[in-house]
Amino acid sequence: MAPAPASPGAQGEGIELPAEVAGPIVEWLQRIELAAALQDRITLDCTRTTRIDVAAAGALRPLAERLATAGKPVEFRHPTALVSALLDATGVSPHAKVLERS
Image 1 (cartoon, rainbow, N blue to C red):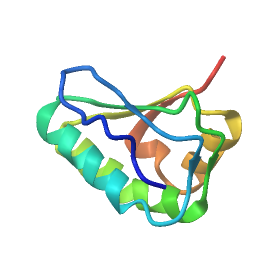
Image 2 (image 1 turned 180 degrees about the vertical axis):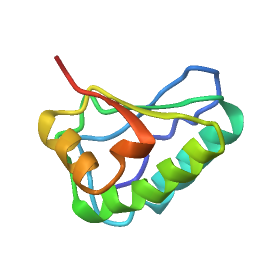
Image 3 (image 1 turned 30 degrees about the horizontal axis):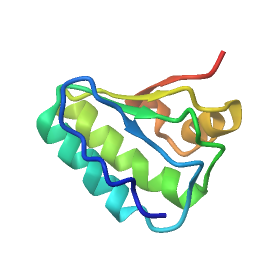
Image 4 (image 1 turned 90 degrees about the horizontal axis):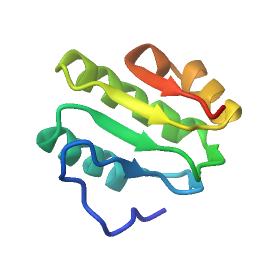
């Protein structure tokens, strides 16, 4: 799962996650860290995301916790109910805002 070539930068610009977030997500974590260095808040657009595996969600938890502690809130926008439940089950939700699809 290689991240899209666009880089984060502009304030308020979201990072669009792919349809499937699975396997090693080191590149995604680096991309989110870069966005955190440039922005006050991190928005992860999950509109296309239908699946996040447990390992990937688990890797997102410490990052979300670290950024929240540093005053850089993380927001997951438009995840499916299943993705939202996994973010909650793996401990991401207490450290990030999860705005489910309506």
